[in-house]
Amino acid sequence: MEGNQSWIAEFILIGFQLSEDMELVLFDAPLWAFSLFCVLTLLGNGVILGLISLDPRLHTPMYFFLSYLDIADMAYACSTVPQMLANLLSPAKPISAGCITQTFLFLTFAVTECLLLVVMSYDRYVAICHPLRYSVIMSWTVCVMLVVTSWTIGILLSLVHLVLLMPLPFCMAQKIDHFFCEIMAVLKLACTDTHINELMVLAGAVSVLVGPFSSVIISYVCIFHAMLRLQSGEGHSKAFSTCSSHLFVVGLFYGTAIIMYVGPRYGNPKEQKKCLLLFHSLFNPMLNPLIYTLKNSEVKNAMKRVLGIESFMKR
View 1: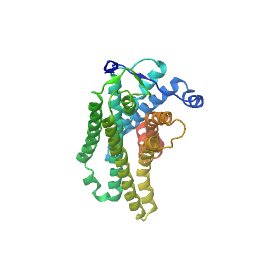
View 2: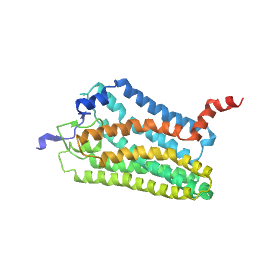
View 3: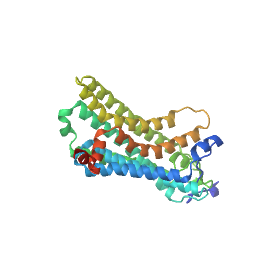
View 4: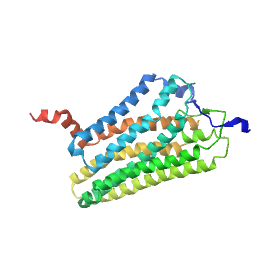
């Protein structure tokens, strides 16, 4: 048995094992389509980052947090999608030490995005429920500390999983049943008891999914309660416009995550979760800039100012 155990330097990603109907739905599109989605993700989030940097009116805590959410989105997509595209081109090509790096990066960016969404919901709570104290509570020092804390927790939590993963002996069966080095798929290759690792993954999932999502719900319950006390219709629409974009993003991010873990078990749940994770990794980051552009008048006005459309229309 000991002769069949070693630290494997290379892994092969199996990718998707779908029915013929599902393969037609998912992979009928040529490879360039997935490459285009990846480019649109980087381009869309890059445009939002550029607008926030160029327009002084967007130099507020809300858009400060949004800029770091865009960075996390781009990094989140880049940690999985390029390897998936490479695997589609060369299915048998192994991934070496980069597999462990990919696991670490994916966990870091996923945890960080969860926490940044909570920070953004807290920012909206303070803006609507305590508007007179907003500038005091959400000072730039506090904003920087919240962002640094989010990234630090994401890195430290990922390091814990990495430290527990590295010493494990792996069997010679080096095929990972996933389209990237997802931690649970990697743990299945271990030739030893992985209950501690699985327990830590579960504890981490609860702490970064259930806990933050509960905080977001509590924040918006307080926000909606405050909105009901507003007398003017203009106050209602302004309060809603500042929250609607964030609510859409939270719904997409947490919605797909919850479906992955508590969704229906019919069919082939393993392959369904892979497809959902593909949506989670590729389409969520691509849709976020579109949501903030369409649902947020401040971003649309900033785009007009940067492109010079607003000044041209005034002439």
